[in-house]
Image 1 (cartoon, rainbow, N blue to C red):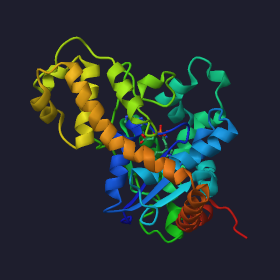
Image 2: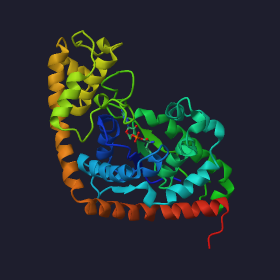
Image 3: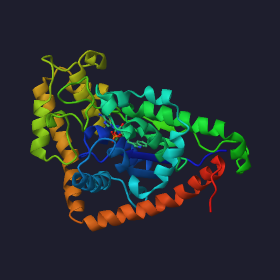
Image 4: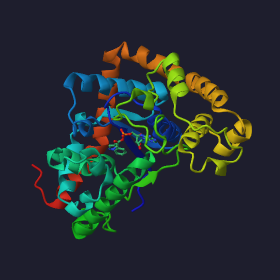
Length: 345
Ligand code: TYM
């Protein structure tokens, strides 16, 4: 069966979004709205796999929703909602917990990183997180998933789950009316962001992340102009001037990261940026980078503030999105129930 092309993706409401989320994923989400039916979720159920203060979680869900809209997602054109309001995600995740194998989950590097040394004390939710992520995507039979590079392994697992479900239940899928025995598509990762890996401003070998303790390591979408300028000014660099060709960035992770950010914000190649700045000292380049970041990001921060002033409107947008999401997911989950042999009364 040829599946209708449909886009699904999500971000965790654990603090405010940062430049990595914006360049690695959000810019693609915005572009895909032009060509595809898009479903963008605030994945609050994923957030609680590690402890969240309930009051902060509630405000982060609204803040991320505001950041989606302020960045350019259109709640009329795309479906925007929070995961916990569409219970089909949790229902399908349970079925996938029974399809995925322990050995598959044991290989997930993000679990190993997040659980750290004290694995026995990690939540079970953190361990089965990739099953819920597969359910997020497949509850909509989504075919395309725009993400940053760090989600690649999780998406491979989602593909394995889709395939195993199709294999395990092939004859029953056919009986349910799917002649080729295929119920779930193989979702394609879309990792084409010009900056699919934005690195920490303090250490060019680590990715920019919400969980790093130093605020100086990331630029948040809610930062004001002075904060952005200060973080860029303090960003770690090396003592050399910028090279004039891309191969000169090899072995210089901090230089490569800053040039990559500049290029991605302009939608240009790194080589083009180096044509302009090759030979320049970091002091000169950082000034230009700070100006560009401020020009691009401060209007988003202002709009986030403006949207958050009316929480009722944000909640209405989420409710409308959840209703539209449910209308797609419910029939899919009903079919899954028929296929696995549950009785629907
Ligand atoms: P999350 O919330 O960590 O990140 C949201 C998106 O931002 C991308 N990203 C980055 N891209 C480039 N450089 C970085 N430093 C960087 N940091 C984050 C992520 O790759 C992601 O695309 N498990 C997911 C959320 C999720 C999901 C899904 C995604 C839940 N269900 C279904 C797609 C489909 C996560 O924790 O993303």
